[in-house]
Image (cartoon, rainbow, N blue to C red; front, side, top):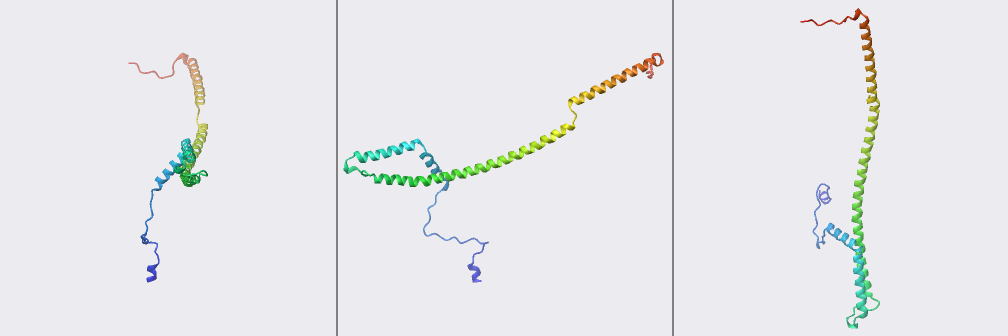
Length: 184
């Protein structure tokens, strides 16, 4: 029984252990937005101008200023260190911004793929409907066909009327065979 209590069960939550030193927390989205803005700024001409001015002022100060106020003499080792430090922070921030953009691009690509699949299915459905309509139209009488049939029937009726008139004229000396309505 004591061994059963020692083993962890999957249906019970773990006991949280208190941390002696609490880890610092930060908002990942806020940090990611900062990284994107920083990377976007580093890709501008403004950043290049500021960086160039910074380096020129640094070098100019350390070449022209009196010896007692110079803080980085000719090989400019401290400037190299500062630029390396800036690059060491810039590279991961740029990579973070690229990773976030890649994740957004992946979502957009998936949405585009789904939209394309829906559009393809809709086009296939419409193509089947068009084929069905073409087949149905082949079986339906067209306007020209109906007109020609009506003309034929009209011609037949005209011929029949002419025959009936000729038959009535030749029989009974023009007497009408039809019953006469009663006179009042």
